[in-house]
Length: 423
Picture 1 (cartoon, rainbow, N blue to C red):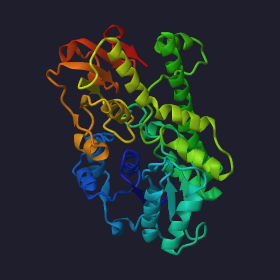
Picture 2: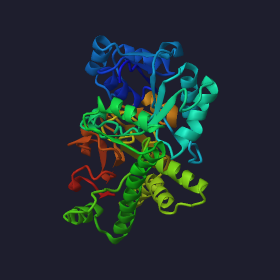
Picture 3: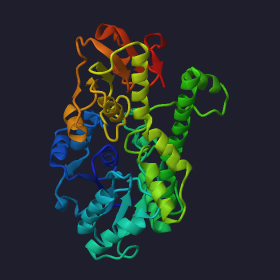
Picture 4: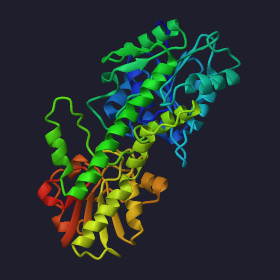
């Protein structure tokens, strides 16, 4: 591991924490196409809040970490890590455009003997069949002769300050046994939780894509249970609490499934399966269930309003939370917007309050208005708790609500006596 110099391409929720960590051990450069993002990082602040300002500033001031948008600044690196997003398009097909772009960047700067490791979530085969050929074509170098590859799937959990990157066991792999060991050693030198060297890149890719697919299917199951028990007049959370007394019962809860992983990865696995002539049934059924939960919540809210004699048309709705999960500013693939859009069909007046979300990003990405300030008063007919931010702990909604109102708790977060219904 002598003379390793690392470049991390993509400085988002995954790339920045990893680059910061690598910088404590190796000379490290972060590369991103977004000049505003790079400028903010070099001033010592991470808008995603994944890396604390003091840690980022320590990396810059004491470990020589720097960020750049200039490819010339990363030519002298020899260990490239690609950590760019892997989204799906409007038809839920994998969009590899960011990976192609990052691979082109690597191809322009890579030299003989260098290694490129991909962290982005993909289906088995993408690294070697899609990304590496781009690097070969642009660089003119031969894979596994002039340069080498690896795959180490990211396991970042946005907003989680307990399971940070160094505390999560890392799967690693390489394009040859020797390179696999080297890649593993580099990661193991900074990951305190340890590493697992997979026998091939495809195995590592497959391991990543099934992690979130498994979680997606389990959440879909309890979402279906919620629909069943609601019709029976049974509280789903009570059922799950009772069932959880068994030692091997899996503690999943119903809810919205968004974000950059759980709501996306199953589509990557499904498309891969279809390429091999197999049409996945359980995986896609789980996706359909979870993708429909926003509309289901909206439907339940309207039903409860009608039961209480509340005029739906023109009523005022307060939505608490817009990010895809609690205690983080990430709005990627948030399913709260599905609730908002379904309710908007009834010509309601909707106010979205989220102390974490960036209103400008929410407006740009989804065309909705989000406020960071809780309305002082509002005379709302209905309140929907959609995201369990810690700021909502102990919140008193009564001053904001009409005497006759509905409170719907998507997360089972509010005191039961304060809500009319929950998933």
